[in-house]
Every structure is written in C-alpha cells, then in structure tokens.
Length: 494
Ligand code: MV4
Image 1 (tube, rainbow, N blue to C red):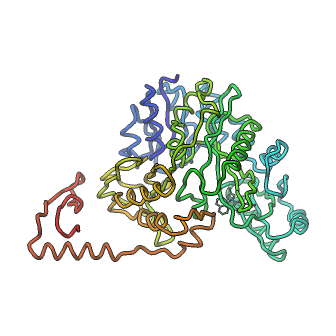
Image 2 (image 1 turned 180 degrees about the vertical axis):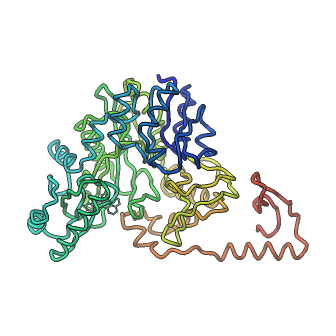
C-alpha cells in the first residue's frame, strides 16, 4: 500500500479522503490556495503545501504544480476528489508519465468516456440500451436539420464533449431547430473548445438513476446498487437517496448488469458511476459515466457497509477487489442533503462569508461530511458546498423523518444556507410519496420563500423575555467570540 498520498482537492471531499487514509496508516499531503490556508483540509493533513493564489487555474487546476508537490513530498499517488482535475485525462496522463499513481481510471478510459458519441457507440455495440439518436457528432447544421426532421420532435441537442447540461437544448418544433442548433454549437465551442453536437429523442420527465461500480486491474467488476438523483436544479443535485423509490428487484438487477457491462466494455478500473435515465414505463437508457468518486458516494457506503475510498486506494495499489457481487447487499435506506452557502430564496446565488455559529446534528444514523467549522470564512472563489448531511434508517419513511430531525438540528449562522429549503423539500408531500423526477424542483419549489414566522416569533420572544428581566439566561460566547443564542437557556427558546 502507498505510504503517502496527495489529495488534489479542498473542502469536505479532501477531508473525507484523508480520514480513510489515516485509518489505513497512509500519510496525507494537502495542497491549498491562499484563501484556504486555514481550511479544514489543511488542518487535517499531515503536510500542507501552498500552491498559489485563489484562481483555480493557478492552484487547484495547476497540473504542473500539483505534480511537482507530489514529487517533492514523496507522495506515490494522487487522489483528485471530484471537480477540479478529477475527470481531466491530461492530468491522469501527467500522473502516469511522472510515475505517480492517479487514483482513478486510466487516462485513456477517461478520454474515451468523455466523448459522448464514442461512449454511446461503444455501449450500443455491447448491447446496453442507449437513447435513440445519432452516434456521430457534427457542426454541419444542414446535416443536423435533416437528421432532426427524420427523427421527429421533441428532441434534445447535446454537445459531444458535454456533460452537466452545457450546450444542451430541447427542441419541440421544427421551426425552432436551426436557432437552437447554432446556439448549442457556439455554447459548446465556448465551454469545451469543440462545437460538435448530436441529437437524441427527448425523454419527458425521466428519473436520473445511477449505479456505483468498482473495478480492479484483474478484470473483477462489481456494482454497489443505485442512487436516485432526480432532485436537482440546473444540473446540480440537491438530494440523493438509495434505494431508488422507482426500482423493482428485477429492474435493479437488469440495470446493475448493464452498469457492469458498461465498466467491462470501457476497460474501467477504480470507482465510477454509470448514469441512466429511467422512464416511467421502466425503460432505461445509458446516459454517461462519471469517472470519479462522486459527491453522493456516502449513501452507497451506508447501505452497502463499504468504504469506497478504501477500495479506491486498494485498487489503485494494484490489489484485487475484495468484494464479490454475490456478497453485496443493499441494506436500509440512506438520504443525502447537500448543504450549500447559497440563498435559495434568491435564485441560489452564492452566499459566502464568515460562519459565526456552527452546530452539527448528531445521533443514530447521522453522518456529516463537512469541510467547515465555526469561525471559518467561506471563500467566494469555489463551489459553495459546505457539507453533506447523510442519514440512514431502516426504511425510506424512517430515513425521511431522521433527515427532518437532523436538518432541524443543523445550525449554521452568519451566512445563508440551503438548510431551510431542504427541510421544506424533505417535508413535502411529493417527496414523501417518492415522486422524484428531474423536474421536481421546478414543478414544486420554483418560487420558494423561507417561512420566517417562526424565526420572528423566536426573536420577539427573546426580546420580551429580556425586557421582563430575563429568565435564567446563561450569557454565552461561542468559540469565535461572538455571543451565541444557542447556549442560553432562556424561556424564549420554548
Ligand atoms: C436527456 C434528457 C432527456 N432526454 N436526454 C442532463 C445532463 C446530461 N448529463 C443529460 N441530461 C439530460 N439528458 C434525453 N434524451 C434530460 C436530461 C436532463 C437531466 C438528466 C439527469 C438529471 C437531471 C436532468 C435535468 C434536466 C435534463
């Protein structure tokens, strides 16, 4: 096993990876940008090396610098986390060329799967269902128009180099096609430096169901069941759960088999995720492969009893996978809520700033993967994810009730977060019923505003209580030196 691993990331995922390294007796090297010098991932690492200014291109995206740090510190392997360089084949290649182990699939596989039409062609040949549409991308709008008219409408335009919804357009009628097409081409050109696009039949109101896979260098591949990720907004997932409320045992088995076939067909090694779109009819289609450890991996860990980072490290070190499909079982129900420094009442604009009060929920079946602490200043420069709240309980209903309690007991003050929004979503009737489709947020929560009544009543109660001489209020000061209301025992709190 490796003696030392560099984590080329920040925030909660860097901390999460370091925790497993520590348990395995592996030393950790953190890299950090200027504004991150007091970040949790820096404090938790055995060594921390500054790699430059805030701009990602000069720090967390700087391939040369990160490889130099790995060499200088004697790290034998690099874990890229998610985002930043995690799915950049050039970074994986640079690691391979420098004799450093990239903890992820081979650069070649990242590259192949990043090409969406190539991936579709490969999977279709292997017998994995793909969404009807083109297998070749082009920038020739005349050719595209011909394809469109023979395919029929509604259809969806996608970028060959795409992912995450960039360069995507839904076209509902022939007269809208050319404009949408030129728009998609220029967007794809700007985002990926490649304007080629292709067409697919548009699926109305599908679910997003993905399968976790693990593969080793010796030809062993397993899947660790699914994650239902339909609750998202603008291609950013908000809540994930497993098992999916939409899968039957038979469908789960067929989709799992397809996911393993995807991994084998692409020559996959390490942890990955195979995404599918699932129609209400039960028809499912291969969408794409995410060649990284995903944000939502903990719900899989809690329901399969595994540590995915441990398996990633073992597989990367050349060991055979210690898991057999027949021994893997899905137990209980897990839900994850992503906690962001965003204002859900104002179009989810980032809301960075200093965290003045911070209290995590605790108790049975609760896990918090956090990258923050009291007194921490959330920087403006990066993805505003603060932490992930993950719960596990016997079944979906118990997990939902546990999530409600956990969210109610998660206190973050000083900045606006998505906690109150998540509470309303998890409490809602459509969520309780498991009616999770990709248009869930747009349909049920487009105009969300916080219910401020309770907060106002509490504030007024506090003031009145103070005017009346106060109850047995304990004057309390938090670790940051700010007065904190959480520790005072005044009657107003009732
Ligand atoms: C689709 C689709 C409907 N029909 N393809 C969005 C991101 C990219 N990975 C694929 N996406 C979609 N592809 C066809 N043929 C709808 C989406 C889509 C979506 C997919 C998964 C999760 C959330 C989504 C939100 C909007 C659209």
